[in-house]
Image 1: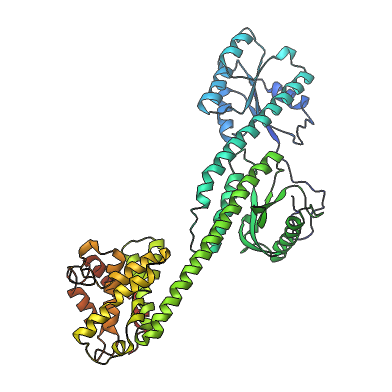
Image 2: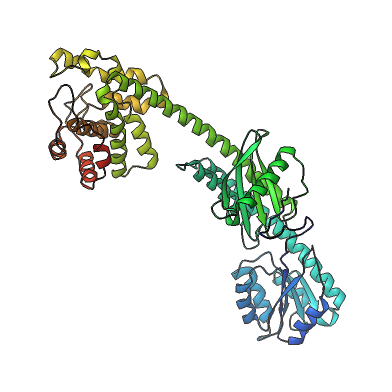
Length: 513
């Protein structure tokens, strides 16, 4: 489908067509009259709706320089004898071997066939036609050029489809690895993958490109990402509104509205026959059916990626909601540690980040840390709320919150990390902790982080079992003293560094005085 491009002042008429890029024809000949006569004989030449643009060179050396400026020459008409007796033939070798250009169609034109016999040239050089200048009438030149351009067009279509399919295959795994922190980042990634397909090479499908990606909710569509002149931050709102209205009607009705024209396409995003959105692309060139089919392949992959991302997000939201509910249970059970739970999660994220962990690991650790004390749900209130020190029997009982926490969380595979934290956050670096007496790096890293964060926050907080909270300096000194015995020294160093930078001030400020 094709959509009209709205202009600021007045819209284009529905029969308006985008400008077509001319076919580039290089004429390499040391006789100026030959170039002029060639242009004269081909005046008004049109093939596939496109005219000609001539690129002239008086020698093979000049032709090499011009080719660097015009790598998209479609046909070259090359004389043989110029600055040397075989300059034209050596130029052919340069084009095919040095430049690796197999698409350009090459026609040898010579006024001295004895210097370059036709059979020898045809057998030893990769050319497409050989003409004696004496026999090259205006009609024969027309025929030769039209035949060469048709071959160039068809070869380019085959090559672009090959490159395009490679691009689709290469991009497909990336769709399923897009893990941006925001939905907008994901949608931008998908749109950029589609645009990358359209900008394959200098002879690519589209010479310039603007685009939009939308998702569907019922019968309405929401713009999720834009590129070029259609980026939501810079595009005129009324223009985006028009595009959204026309394209929505097009994909929902599966019909071509009158407002659509050449130069823009609407590609539905469908997953298992269900419409999930559309991609809108505007170009300065007209796409062939083969081009559109290739873009549709990429769009189908995009739709599957969007569905997978949506499913992934739903599962993540369900997991986060589960974690939040369990954390709330622990908060309602022990009001003194409710905000403590949230602070521990954030301490854990910041320490893990300081240790160089990836964003995904940092977030995983933070979610798991929320549930470090979930086992206290099973501890009697009289122990949790007791004023003053606990007896040995009460201490033994409260320590069971680690095994209770593991038992609560162990049945759900998605909570495996949280179960690990609940079970081992009271282990010590020297092996003197509980419940399993693990030591050193046998203790999972996230548990080592939570252990230090847990004690640090507890020292700064008022609790029923201790008379007063500690100062920050006292708490940091205590954590330092525990490095190598109670705590992992690397974790302690990371905690001390971020505290010294003031990166924990916002969390510490939420601790009741």
